[in-house]
Length: 138
Length: 58
Image 1 (cartoon, rainbow over the protein chains, first blue to last red):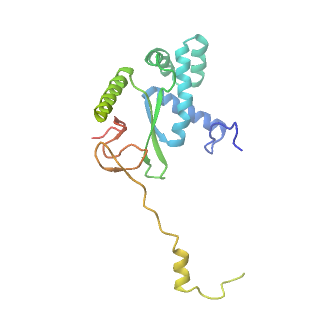
Image 2 (image 1 turned 180 degrees about the vertical axis):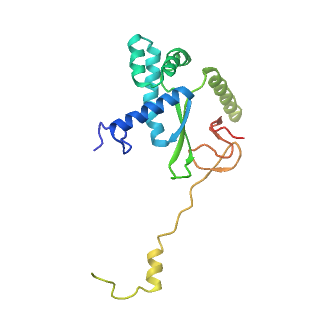
Image 3 (image 1 turned 45 degrees about the vertical axis):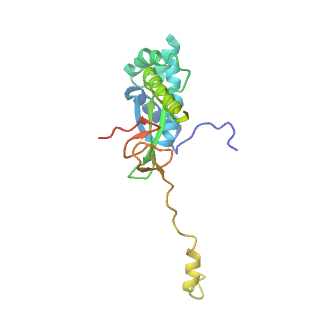
């Protein structure tokens, strides 16, 4: 039974896995988008969102917790300044995973993880989508 | 070591292989560019998924 066994080991030792996760999360928060395999993408989501939640808390303790995980001080600062403001009205779901296809070398399924971009753009798109739906229904 | 006693006929060989055929992949049509694409995956020809630009193309 796999009850209460969250997460995947990815065939790595825990230190290797943790190091990889830290690198991936730091890169994602730095560049806002990262290309990896499907499985890793899905794992990165949860940790990256936890970092943003720490950023939204904004306390000194939260900042130290984030710095203990994120490898780049500047990136951590960005989480607390930029992302906390950007996602102030959003309760979770700061990341998006889009599957893209298969890697050439080893046929591994590849996805793109990205941070959801600005609220304004999203709302504009939502409105566009809604009006399209309305047109269809009419 | 045990070895096969007699050779299998063509019929037997072909019967064995009757289940070996490869299936063609299921494909969807991209709503943006009408090219075939894999379902639940971004379209690789126009780089969009669910009406959103995902992969920078061109």
